[in-house]
Length: 229
Image (cartoon, rainbow, N blue to C red):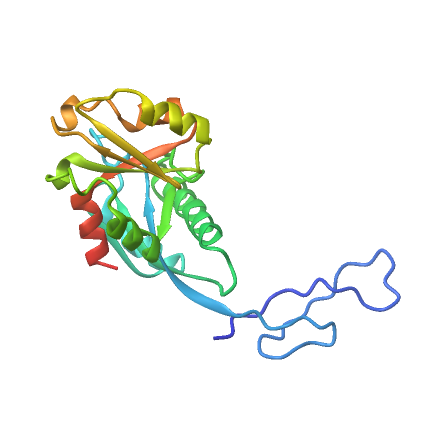
């Protein structure tokens, strides 16, 4: 569909130190050749780090959902107290997925700060965010699924960016037994058979070794998120 009006920055003939003229032509091409902007609805998942954990960074979810709706996000859903957020955002049709999610993540972080006075260090500078298709691809890929038999001990760490190849190589080549790690694109998968309390390949460990920011969700949580997409 065609989106809302947008500002035209084209300059009129004979322009000389004057402000750009405005164009409010949502469905037609204006005289300055500003084409209409095609938009698309993108279902995004935002994964803030450190929300409602240990009594810190408290965000009442019953208040967060209407605030997201007021901010223009359609069908907002929150899953578990860690504020896994699913919402539909309007984006431009030709916008890359990571650009879409980065914009949504930044807006959600600002909303948390403005409405709840919560300032969270989150992935994707500022929040971990992925599209619905990316979450579904992660679940389909499941590179450690052949050994992981407990969803609560199978973790996906969402990284702020793709880490350097040599850093990945050093990490995966090291002996972390009984834990196993697999890094692919902007996700690091960890199998911790002895449970989370014994976890050594934590998100903070990955941050130090990979030089990125990370936040983790276990497999059970990701399946719950996928069921709501």
